[in-house]
Length: 351
Image 1 (cartoon, helix red, strand yellow):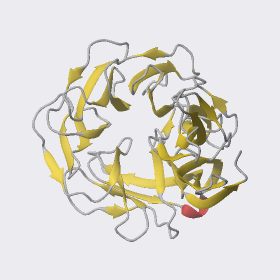
Image 2: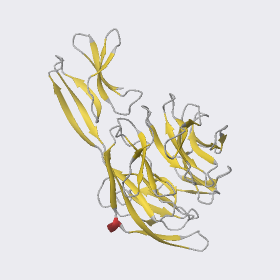
Image 3: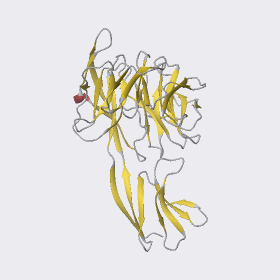
Image 4: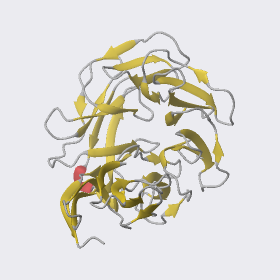
């Protein structure tokens, strides 16, 4: 809830709120003293904040939309025989726009992932709340994979293409769930209070995730078929990413990027923060990340062993990169970009 105003006759309140089963904030009337709630708006945009005129005849609020698009672009690259260095380049002139939509509830936990057969898995709010969809690399054959009225977000695809893991609050808390890549056989894997950002291990046998069981965010893992979670890190750690060979784990501790053994143990190397949304480039011992050090958010790459970073994309417009994902052969890159727009709305003749 956010933005509460009493009606002049004290018969109730107006407020901006989201239902448990929706990520879209709407305007509600709550009767007083009964507490019965009635939704006044039914829009595909979100409202934020609310102020009521003294006589109760009009209100002002902010309407926010978050249009975004997904594009696919070809990647060219050469690789050393050891796989520890690589030169990558992107042909931005061959970029293909494959999807445009709106994130009414904002861009939290949006993620892109590729299947082995080059389908793209993503989250969108087209159905009225956050659900997971898939489509071909050209945007065709779009399929809705989750239909639960709660929020399903942050998907990742197993190396063999059999499973998708995702985050859902359908059980009353943010937990990790698993389903087949066609949306079938949805199963809850974790059952604590807050578990987020699931990713598969390189062999597909484990799911790494960010858990708050100890009172702070740390990295955990559990078998993909289900079982008891195992704590991997004890220090503050977010957003796990497992290297292509399975030996290394990259994560963010809110002040720096940390490289550590995926089996657990002391960090091997740390980097000063340059951005966020770290990912390993498939088939290469190289990390990619987002940075706005040039004034515009772009994707950069960096060897985990040190050396110079390389700017991979050169977007000129401000629209932030919300998510990106490498295809399994690292020959394509999917990028989601968007920028919120807000307008102050006057609602008159309230009854």
